[in-house]
Length: 235
Image 1: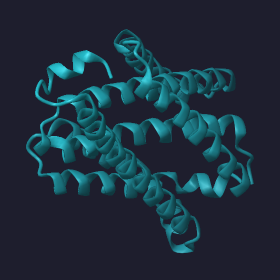
Image 2: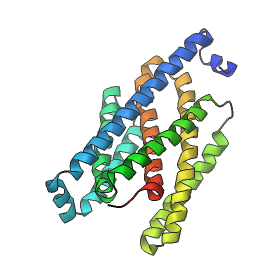
Image 3: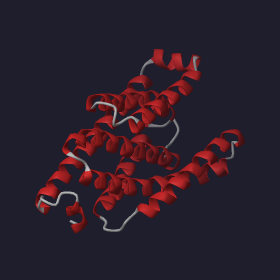
Image 4: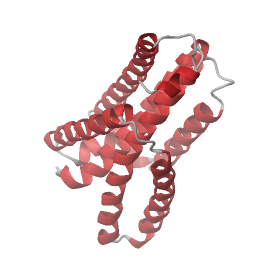
């Protein structure tokens, strides 16, 4: 472990720091995995419910409302984490997973189950590899992270513009860029979470695990959606 980390806990030996860090990161990944399972269950359940399908078909504006709810939850958890209790932050995180399942259930209808499963495992492999890299690398990814955030803003702007242009070529370019951006963000976010875990006091660990899980959950979901453009097969 880098000796700089000892500055945060000068009275703690390296082995204890390593165990503490491992325990925190394990909580992050467990929360993230549970949220992915919640999203998958909700998406599958909704895709099998004729009533749900009819409701959203007759009320397409509901997707925009759900998108707004998602944005509010992310802003609420990220911006208000210090004011929220640990249980409230965790509850909002899993509520976000439920809402995202509602947002994503049309994908289950649009693509074959086999291609969704294949894309999921590809995403899990890529995500896992980049997260491991971000965790163990001694390279400072701060500069890369700043560039990726700027690229992400550009990606969002291009995606909004393409809603009106309906350009297939731009759509493919956006998808390629999206895959590359979220591959990089997975490594950067993992390193950032690791650094915060090393500095966090014990009473803040639960909240940190929630924020970290939300961040990596978003990386995973977005990477999955962009990869689905390449590996997904329509029903």
